Image 1 (cartoon, rainbow, N blue to C red):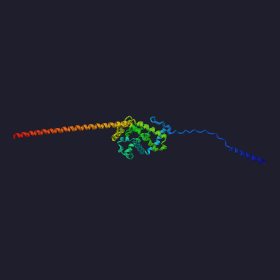
Image 2 (tube, rainbow, N blue to C red):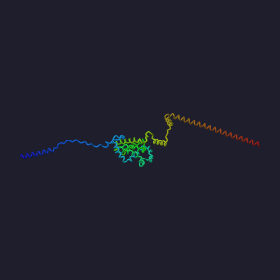
Image 3 (cartoon, rainbow, N blue to C red):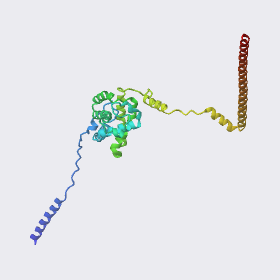
Length: 303
């Protein structure tokens, strides 16, 4: 009996140890190690102070948007040029090297090679500038060498602004053409505009010669209809005072009467003159007859 109890105690003590071992002691919480992530390229890059952008993210956004334009640059350039000339038809005469530009339909001309080359001039400048926004010196050299061949003036550059922005918006769509994207392209266009003014003719203070010529042609083709001011004044006066009509009638009657009297006097004078002439003729004939009688008497005496 005693041996059984001691065995039982030994087994029980083993189980207790097992249970004690199964209970895990709580671990101490370890401190999280801080991970130093590399900075993004946009955060590390700085913007050239000559550019109108405040951070590199704006440059990154413009480049991403421009990639979509590059895939259809010819079409976008022609669309912008057509819109520009449609809204400013007076500038058609400027581009003399584009055949038929002055008279032919723009939708037909968009398929001509010389029209496409002229339309691409401005888009090539924007493409080179956007590509070299991190190398501003190259962008400025592009503007310097390519500004004059565009044949644009200061007024034309200002008029080109809206068609350009509208084409970007049309091609990107309302989802991608956000307010931030529009603001970035506005800044870009102003930068290109200011730089191109250094190399193109500034005609902002000059009269628009093309428009004046068109106005002169229109004036020559249509004769002005000048109203009879005196007649209108008399008509208004007659309408305001009915008595004036009676006076006018009396004046007309008096004028007719005077004309009739003057005519009668003229007729009488003419008749009198005719009578005098007739008498003179008669007298001349009498004198002739007398001379004939004298001649005949002389002849009788000689016989």
